[in-house]
Length: 151
Length: 374
Image (cartoon, rainbow over the protein chains, first blue to last red):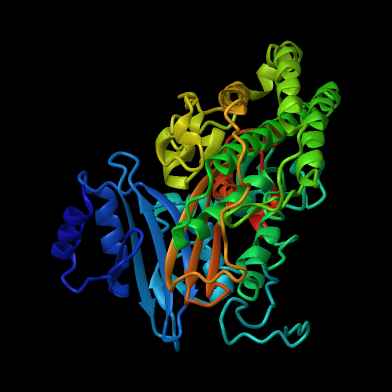
């Protein structure tokens, strides 16, 4: 599918979707509470078939936390970027482990660094930091009290 | 909970747990695997990462793009040059800079030399892990020749940091072309020796054939890329499907197999070495005189926006994701590391096999731990 067809398809699927302009790939900002339904549909539908998740990234934007999904279809060779934003108080989103098992470790990484809680994740624990580590290091307001190196 | 889930949990409770690593010789680094066993059978593998976590993504947020290149060396240290290139390509594409053709060709040659050196080391340690210590000496002997080429031209043997946005730090050494040619002639004779030494070995084949099978669908779902993914039939070669640098100018084959077991992951890498040599041969005489870098401003500021760059490192698809606010440092930088994705499939692949097979499976995945922990 071309980017335009993809755009129309997603618009039909979720009317609330917003497309970012002047981007490298097609970027769709989708409602957070629908992320599981959207990703499942995009993977299972034969005309989109996004079966390969390149990366799952956590981002701390000034006004919200976000999870960014880079998806590609190995069948049709099209690529899309999904973005789901969450409020800063209580960041929560559905896990997509069931859609792509690759997400399991990557979601644990995002939980570890950003404190984003993934609902229905089979084993949500810290991945890189110690179990008893305080705070979420990749957040912009994170202060490391022990090893302060300010440049 | 479903019945199968309850059954699985009961099995896990019943299991006998053994730690592989963080200092196990076959993990090649500090990765700890908590392996659940029933007798000798593996029923569950739980990776514990973070022993070499350095917070590189956080560090990047305070560094300029030229400084970040030195950090990317320390991710997958066996494909350092390719990691450097990924950041450089991202900056060049974001700024719309066209680098000289000379730079593109040399970058591609260096990439393929990196791949050869890395595969040589992988072959050495794979044999060693499975009890054939001789391979270690053969592989390292030949790898040394590539490292010497790197040392002469870039100043670094393992971590060159030779690429900069726009081109290179300095020009290559005049010996670069003759020595590379010399190496190709040498290694073409040596590579069949590798096959005679290990590939046909009965013990080696019995320990790898049919071990750790990964189907094509699972490889895609887990995002297993590189030779490991291609051994399962997942056509994921970024060089072929999204060419960068000079890969569009050369003719090479994407190695694909459908078996997806440890042995074919091994064969895929062996075949890739021939393809790498083919690529270098096509390019080595096309290095023309000219500048070694495009004109760059001293302070690089990316226009506000989000960028993604993918390259093919030795172990699979490496991605750099940058969010820029127009400043000289990135707002957020994320590395999609191939080893991290490959590791996620380890649990699934090794279930049902014996604990001794874990060594063969891990060796055939060729994990590099600093790339996982970042």
